[in-house]
Amino acid sequence: MPTKTRSGPNNLITDVAGLRVGNHSDKRLKSGVTVVICDEPAVAGVQVLGGAPGTRETDLLEPHNSVERVNALALSGGSAFGLDAASGVQAWLREQGAGFEIAGHRVPIVPAAILFDLPNGGDKDWGRHSPYREFGFEAAGNAGTSFDIGTAGAGAGAMVAGLKGGLGSASTVMENGITLGALVAVNAVGSVTVGRSPHFWAAPFEIGGEFGGLGLPSPMPDDAQEVILKGREIVKAGANTTIGIIATDAELTSAAAKRLAIAAHDGFARAIWPAHTPVDGDLVFALATGRNKTALDLETSIDFYAAAAQTMARAIARGVHAATAEPGDLLPVWRSRIKG
Image (cartoon, rainbow, N blue to C red; front, side, top):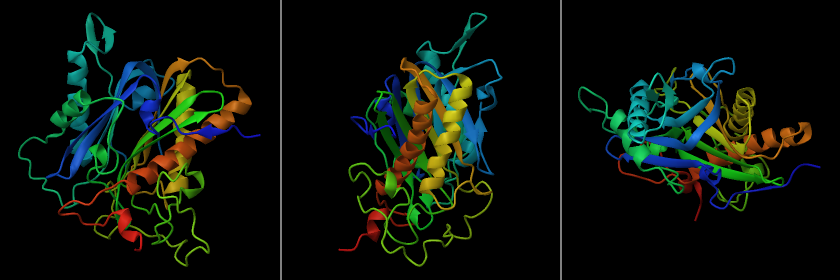
């Protein structure tokens, strides 16, 4: 029998004890940064399946490399400019005395990923230096167990096919007490809804009407199989990307953390059509805090990785569902598709 699951008390990635999340957004730029701070260094992994990624410090997360744990993860808008955000997070952590100690020095470990939100109606004329390093510092300082989703942080300027994207989060508590949480900035070239309807592809995994409670359409619309993409001017290499984090309080090795990141990509495929395209930089980081000592045997590990996928799918839908309209938007919000 499959393991029964429920959402955590806040339905956020911070239901995984030991994690805090901070956002910083700039309405003029229509962009921002989201940071996950680990109270203690956490085992981490990564899997990149999109064809156009933008990353920092991902090689060190491979299981065969030496540094297994990280102090924080950064998700940012701004395309390659947004990689500066990790330097701001690193500066904040250094002020807190956090980091990998070597030869009498502390080096905070902050892998990062970016999405492309430059042509979204925001003013990107920031002068010589991009603002993302300061955005990262501010986001780290804002970190707590409660945070905004939708048009916030790294999702502030996100777009998907036909709609505004956003920052989403969700959590799952398994029957054995292990908690998983997902955080994702949804900026896909594809669609998160079935055709041009308001029904989310992630509907089979929804808990308690968390993204509208509409279920799947019946009958399926004629355009359900149609590949609906963003406008032609945005469908180009590196111009999209969904970037996410899947976290758990379970004890995992580096190899198991990578398997967790791989499993969470199934959530992309369940919530976005199409996903992992050549023009998306789709990436998932994994974090394991190890605070829950419950062992994962073969049977429960299958349920565990399945829960990772469904939690990520729910987070994706929640991010788009929560997006709010702002002046200068190029696309409508999901709620505009609800009649009456």
